[in-house]
Length: 454
Image (tube, rainbow, N blue to C red; front, side, top):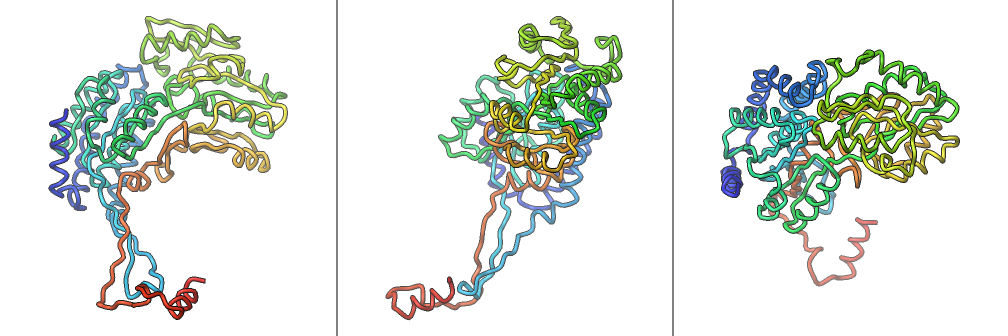
C-alpha cells in the first residue's frame, strides 16, 4: 500500500490531472461504467442487504448520476478563477482566486450506502483534479468487490486505486502516509481516531459522521402525511441511514394518534407478513442484530419487536422513548423508532441538548414561530421542514454535519471546493511601486494611510 500511495503521488506530480480535458474525460468514463454496471450494482445491494431494486436505484444510483451530470455540466465554470475587486491602495493590480488540486486524497466509505458514499466524494475529488485512494467497507462484501472492479476497469491504478490492505491497519497507514486530504464517512469513534492521527501530519480532513437526528411533530401539521413521511424515512434501508430520523418528539396531545398512523403506514408499506416482503431489507451483520436487539429488550415495545438473528431480521419496531435508556444515548442505525413527547417548546431543546449537533433535523409544523424557534435553538448539519431525508437528494445543497456529526460539507460544487486548494493571487501588472509602505514612516505617510483606511 505504501508503494501504491507513492505511485499516486508520482502521478499527481506529473500535472496530468490539472486540465479540464483530463478531468471531464474521467468523469464521463465513470458515468459510462456506472451505466454498464447498473444492474450489477442493484444485484450486489440485493445480496448484501436484501435492498429492493427501486430503493437501490433511487438512494444510490440516481444520486450518483445527478452528481456526475452536475459536475460534467459545470466543471468548466467551477475551474475558472474567481475574480475579486482590488482596493485602490493596491492598484494597479488584479486579484483572483485559483482553485488548485490538493494532491492525493484518501476516501474511506461505509457499508450502508456503499456505492453512493464511495462515488459521491470520488466525483468531487476527480472534479477538483486530485488522485484518490479508495477504501470501501468490506462488510458489504459483494458491493466492495464490485466497487473495486469498477475502479480498476475505469481508471489507471496510479491515478485512482482501491485500498486492498487489512482494514485494521488503516489508522497506521494514515499515520505513515502524507495524504493531502482524508475523506471519511462512518462512526464518530473512528472519525475521532482519524482526526487525531491526521493532526500528526497536519492533514486536512472531511468527516461525515452521524448522531441522533430528531424529527419534531407539532399539532398544526397534517398528522397523517407527517406520519407517512417519517415512517418511510425511518425504515428506509432498515434505518441504516446516517440521516434517518433517529427518534421522534411529538406533541403530547397527539401522541396516540401519531402512533396509530405510523402503525397504519408500516402495514401499508410492508404488509402483514413483513419478513417475506421483498421491499423490506436486512441488517448488515449478526452483531448488529444483537446490538439492536439489546435496545429492544430494555424498552417498552409499542409495536413490532420481532428478531431473527440468523436471518438478519428485525421487524419495524416502535418503542416508548426513555431518556435514561441506552437507545437514547447512542445512534440507533436500525429499524427502531423511539417516540418521546413534549408539552412546552422548551422541552424539545432540553431533549435534543442531550445529544447535541445532530447530522439532520426534521420539523413538521405549519407554525412559523415554532419553526423559527427550533431553527434558531438547535445546531445541526442540515434537514427538512415538513419532509424527511429528501435534502440529500438535492445535490445543489451542501451536505455535512457539525462538530460531533461531522466536519466539512460536500456534494457537487461544494464538494469541488472542499477538495480544492483555494489560492488567492494578487497580480501587479505594471512596474509601479508606491513608497508609502516603506520606512521611514513619516507623518505624511501616516495621514495618507488614515485617509484610505478610515
